[in-house]
Image (cartoon, rainbow, N blue to C red):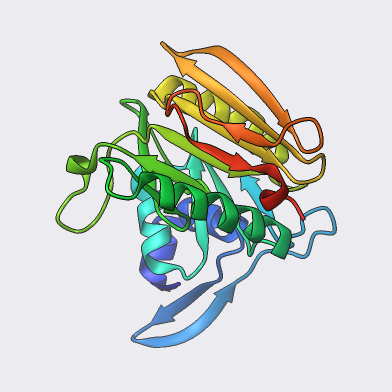
Length: 241
């Protein structure tokens, strides 16, 4: 990201937040690159495959407007949950294999139906509160309110179903923060796919609560099945390597 020196001087705290999520800031003066602001090396912070490092700087929460400025100027992928930025690195083969198999089944099942399944990267903007706008990129979403897609292809609705495939570095965020976010914002069903344990957890969400949850495990079950979409099921032998 290239930023004029006067802008850096006036809004240093904002750009410090961007540096904390591994965004390189190139400072310009009179149209020339004069300096770089880089994150310090930290052995405790590693952006590995499927990594999702979260940062909330001492300057406070990241606003929705600041987040938009970051993503529009960066080639990296980010999420914003409760004022915290998460840097999304490249997923692993096993992760993408599971996503591909689930989406393939979803695509065929929803063909010629009202709802449509989409895969990441695709921004889902959720209004958790008036001053807490969150932006996430679920691995798979099922959208039934396509009228909430604007002319620029930006979606500002609430997906009916969301799927997240867990990895060691995203496990806590997906199981806790995203479950809470989806619950509060009106998502009807949430699938958590756990390749490590060959499990699919299906959460049924209603009125800001977890109405029910079901676990499907490879070996004990043949399929993971949707509750909201009766008849939608995915073969577990296809999902897990």
